[in-house]
Length: 169
Image (cartoon, rainbow, N blue to C red; front, side):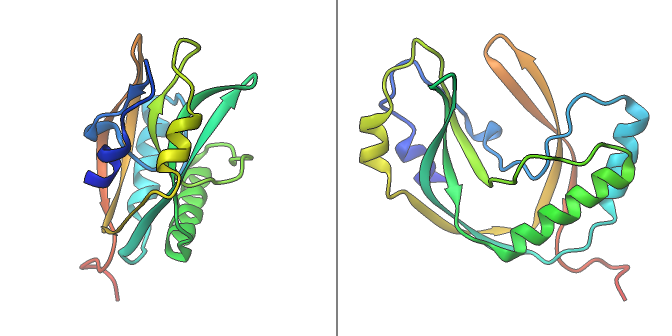
């Protein structure tokens, strides 16, 4: 985590994420009612997958109308992460959500940008060889997000462990 904070600087007017907001999204669900949210949590609780190591590698950005709106760090290839993401997708669809049509691009958003933010080219050149990890992934979380004037705020709702479960045979 410290390595991420070392690169989180030098873009004027960027809204850098704090430690509690840094996450890797396995599946964006969107707004759902309480019964469906409970069904999703129940389906996610049945996922069985091993704990694994994960490395962050490189930087990138997302753009809208040719204007960068977020900068992020990527994730090194991880078969275990891809298996977990597919299990999460299957669980969410089984619970009643529509299937995701966008390609999974594992990343951790570092900052949100707007049109008043400074250019990102120098920052990308300076930190483009970013690397952090390996980090142990032994759980995943279901978050609730709330849109505020300062961007989305993420609150953990349920934590799901990875690795051996007592009821596994």
